[in-house]
Image (tube, rainbow, N blue to C red; front, side, top):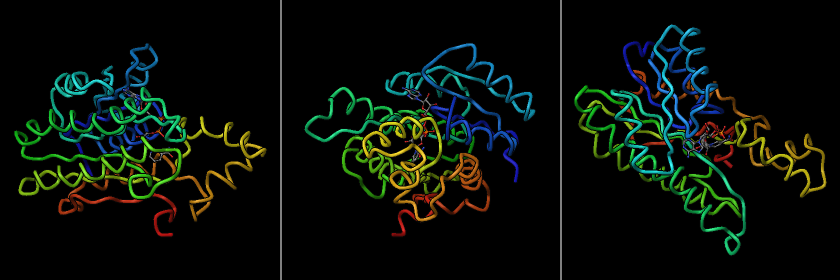
Length: 257
Ligand code: NAD
């Protein structure tokens, strides 16, 4: 399977799943645009190191996915966008009545509305190229719910809905749009939840991972960023050309329960 000659833009890709997806797309031959809201030397070094490792063109473009104009500017600066992976995301856990509005707005903007802005900017480029693949990183929380994750669950359900709309608007062209719904993947986003979870249940961090965090994941294992990346590569392949408007769960059985 080769994505040689294709340009992939992955939002929120200087760590975790986004970086894992970017690395698997580069391994498959795609040129890659990495992104986050920071503009540090280490972000650009990440791109240079990946370029040396995979022998493809890798750039880093800073853009804040909480801002519509930045989302569109990212795609414009990329100059080409055959593969768009909407991955940037943040999380906040709080009961509805205490949920800070500023957190709600940020989660909806970064996790959901950014996909609208980047997709709107990328579709004309895909149409011109006569080929395109949009992969939205949703979540098991795009198909199910948990208490205290109101904004995250709402945003991820929104991403799943928007995935279907994008697929319908592009169905007659060689453009597909699908969502990957990961269960728990061991990334900085999940790492940040472990100490609080352990404290809340008066457990060690190891017990918190096993008994609380992976409680809903029947495999009792984290998915890896390489597995999410491999799924994205599959969705970009010819074998997946008729797969559009759907979700692929990579969740160790979570949504089968
Ligand atoms: P992470 O914290 O490692 O990665 C989040 C990425 O988004 C980082 O690169 C960060 O820099 C970037 N980001 C945050 N705010 C941004 C902004 N304003 N503009 C641009 N980039 C921004 O977390 P992750 O676990 O890799 O999460 C990646 C995606 O996967 C998210 O959408 C998350 O909801 C989803 N997801 C994660 C899990 C999991 O268990 N880790 C499960 C399901 C879905």
